Image (cartoon, rainbow, N blue to C red; front, side, top):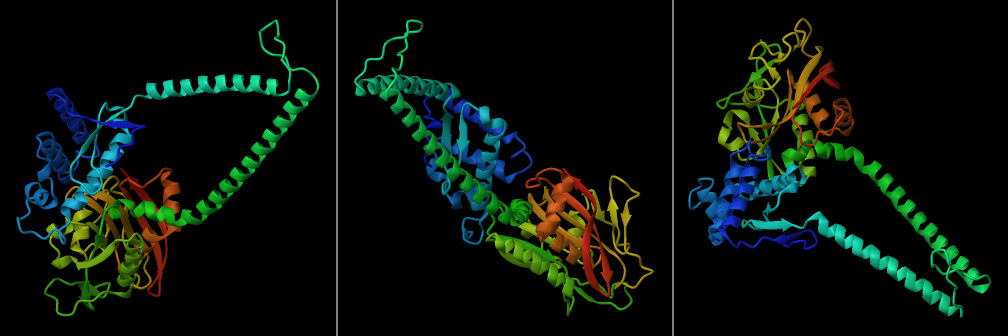
Length: 434
C-alpha cells in the first residue's frame, strides 16, 4: 500500500512498547460499533495483526486464513468460497469508517491494503506541522511581494522616497502610477475570466447532479447489501394450487411435484434482479424450502414473499413489523398492538387491499445485510419490490425519515389497492429505523 507522506508515515516497530501500543489500538477498534456486533470481521483483523506483530506475515495467505480463521478444510476451493476475500473487503471498509469517525484522533492507525492480507501501521502527522508550514509559506509570499515592489520601481527608473510616517515607499505621479493601474486592471480581467469558468463548471456539475440524483437514492438503499459482493441470494418461495384457500394457493414444500411462481412474484424477482445487477453483482435464485441457514450466511440476502417463504417469517419475526403465524396472515406492530394490518377477507382476493413490509437491516443471525420485500399476498410482494427499486418512492421515504438512510436499519409498512387482480401504487403507513 502506498503511503501518503503528506498525511502519515509508516510505523516502524522498534520496541515492545510499539507493539503494545498497536495492540491497544486493535482493542479499541474491536470494541467499536463497526466491529463489536460481528464475529467474522474481528476474528480476521485480530489474527492478521497479531501474526504480523509476531513476524509471521508470510503465513497471511487466503487459503491459510480460510483454514485458521474460518475453519475451512485444507482442500477447500478458494474460487467458489470467497469468505476470506469478502471479509477482508468488509474489514477495509470498516477500518475507514472507524478512522473517519471517533478513531480520527488515534496516534497510530491500522489499515489493510487492497490485494493483501498483511496489515500496515501508520503514524499520522500532527496538524501543528501543517500550520507551521502554512505560516512559513505566508512569510515567504510576503517577502517576495516586497522584493517585486522594489524591482518594479527600479524598472521605471525611479527611486521611490520613503514615507517618514511608516518607512514605506511612496509612488510618484506619472508613468509609474499609470503602469501600476494598468497591471491592476489586467489582474481584474484575469480574475473575472477565472470566475466565469468556475461558474460554468459549477453549473455543469449542478445539472449533472440533478440527472444522477434519482439513481443515487436507489444506490444508497441497496449499498449495504451490495457492498463487496460478487453474488446476492434472492430467496423466494413457491406455491401449488389450493382452491379451498382464500388466495387459491398454498405454500409448496420441497417435496411438491409441480410448484410454481405467480406473475406478481416473478415481477418482484425481476425488479430486484435489475437493481442488483445494475451494481455489477450477480443474482443467485434459491427456493426457501431447500435453502439451509448455512447457505444464507455466506451471502447478502433478498427475501421475496412472506407466507410462501419460511425464511421471511423467521428472520423478520424479531423486528418491530413482522408477520403473524399462518393461517392468520396479519402484519403486527411489536411496539403498538393496536396496529394490525390484514386483507379484508369479506371481499374477493382480487379486489381486497393488500399490505406489505419492506425491510433492510443487518441480521445478527446471518451476520450480514438482508432486504425483504414481502406482502400479505402476492400483490403486496410485487408492490414492495417496486417500492424498494423505485427512485420516486425511496425519495419519499428519505424525506419522511428526514435523514440519510444509506447505513441505517429500515422497516416500512405499505398499503396498496388491488383492482381485478392488478397491483396498485403503494403508500407508506408506518416507518421504523434504528
